[in-house]
Length: 162
Image (tube, rainbow, N blue to C red; front, side, top):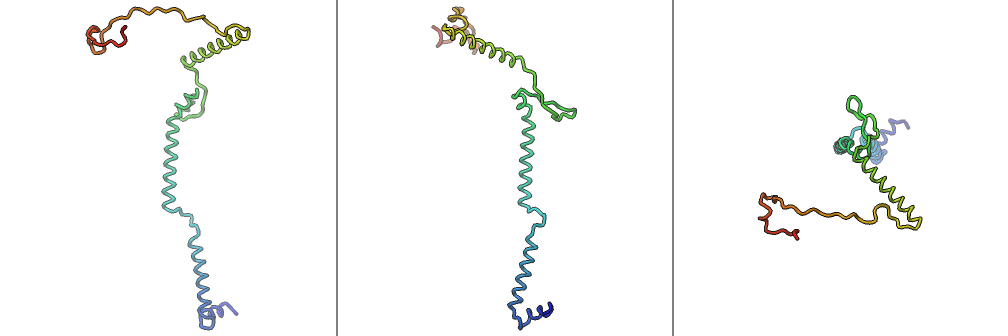
């Protein structure tokens, strides 16, 4: 049977409407498959979600750039900037006077601890430094004007006076 004969048979009473219905369902399924295939277009809801994600990422990046100098400073680093002001590298920053003093204090304390441990190995008390606190005499208290501008004698209560 040739194709045209089959087509006639399908759409006439000889083949019945049953074959025509099956053919139409097949054609419909193919059409649905073509229409539902991805077209490369992004749905509007997905596009809006992607734009929101990009906005959030941009905001996070701006915050990172804003906080970067403070984070680098806490780590003891500083940014190396190019002629345009963009960061081109990182280098170790020199210690401030306060940081250097902190290091020296810690080193001296560690030296005392180590000396105390060495003395303790010898069986002596592990104390490095003076045996007791030095005697300190406090000066006589002074009467001054109060914070409210009244003379000291006019204040009714003196909770810390002895």
